[in-house]
Amino acid sequence: MDETYDVIVLGTGLTECILSGLLSVDGKKVLHMDRNNYYGAESASLNLTQLYSKFRNGAAPPAELGRDRDYAVDLIPKFIIASGELTHMLVHTDVTRYLEFKQIAGSFVYRDGKISKVPSTEMEAVKSPLMGLFEKRRAKKFFEFVQGWKEEDPATHQDLDLDKDSMKKVYEKFGLEPGTQDFIGHAMALYLDDDYITKPARETINRIVLYTQSMARYGKSPYIYPLYGLGELPQAFARLSAIYGGTYMLDKPIDEIVLDSDGKFVGVRSGDETVKAKQVIGDPSYFQPKGDGKVRVLEGHKVVRAICFLKHPIPGTEDADSVQIIIPQNQVKRRNDIYIAMVSSTHNVCAKENYVAIVSTIVETDRPEQEIVPGLNLLGPI
Image (tube, rainbow, N blue to C red; front, side, top):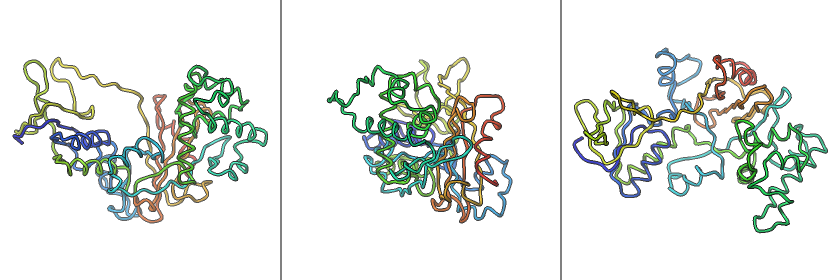
């Protein structure tokens, strides 16, 4: 490890692997290291042994779950919106050649004590219990406004200025009920809370357009998901980096970020070996202050997640093999939504006739386990 590199990348999370791939394509000499013996860091997909080692102190997984190698359980649940930025990045960098995707079968929203499918066709919209007849007419006018908006044609603006007028004003313009606002803002624009309502409407309108475009692309739902789990994404970008000369080292402890006398980065030490580079990039866990040094990490919210193994589809989802369910915060008197992401053996992430559901939300209290109970209650026997 006595070579000198342009960049050392620490951690193989998705962000780090994307950067590693792009830097390698740009001709940079890249060394990519991870303390774990698997790719993905916090966005890895683990087999049962790895999962139980991480969360159950190495206890043996229950035999009824099936073979270890059949599992690839995501540590961070995420569905990819079909027309979104990540999809464009995957296509632009051509890493799609290493990946295979499957559509998520349905998107659902919780309202008034039950879950309902987010309509994916006009016929489903007409039959949907999410809105009454007159509200459906008002919502139809709203969506026609969104789809018909042309920046250069004031006739399509209906006296609204998306850069100045709040989303609240837009909702009021079309007379939409609070329940419909919940559905649009949380199940379509995918906001976690209601802060967006008082902000200029353009960002929300753009999100709704993205959702509807993604829905139109494949039908059923706007989401796609990689076979063998989300951990395939960082691995795909790692392959891209390797093709362009990137060097990878897994299971490599990082003992020290080496600085010179002026406090500038020099290299990285692992055991008795030190490798030098002009620049270092990494996830925050690799940068710990030494002595009176400081590390600036912007900490946002904490998230609570429960990984649940099921022997059945989630009740009320038309026996779908994969779903997203959003519980808007207003429905359960919270400040943040609760999310449920479920996948199955169809996606090569668990044994046959098994399902993996992950319930998550942003922590608001000192009893986070209680905060996801409304989501757990929708799953049936766990």
